Length: 181
Image 1 (cartoon, rainbow, N blue to C red):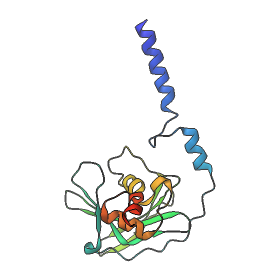
Image 2: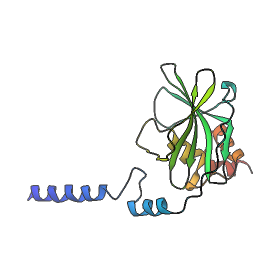
Image 3: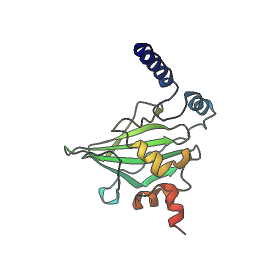
Image 4: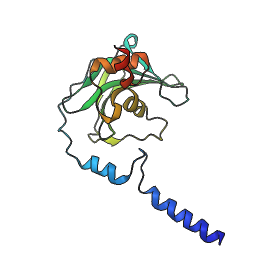
């Protein structure tokens, strides 16, 4: 009897696992959002290379020794609904990774437009596809940027200034509306 009960429980859990993704919603709901019309992406111009003195550090929410930053001068909210920004990750081993990225708030996707190179130049990414953000990967700091600073309630933050203010204060973007009164 125990073996049958355990087998039924395992089968039920296995059936549920396909209905819920890493983002925590039913698959049919995510597919509905994914299949909605997404505005055509606007042409992207690369920003000026970030200066260390201007960077705003944010906490990623995962315990670790890397440090995460955004260049406030690069933050923009496009008419296409994409929030773009330059991210800088300083690793515990001393490496610095720089990338110019975009977030589609509604579909919870990310894209890397360019990578920083020695000599403070950009190398445009050959990948032109959008990828789903995965909350379970420790390296996906984009989850924190999406949820806390750039895409509250899966909508682009109200303004570039609100996004930068949220980063500076370390508050969720929705909380900055209350603190500006």
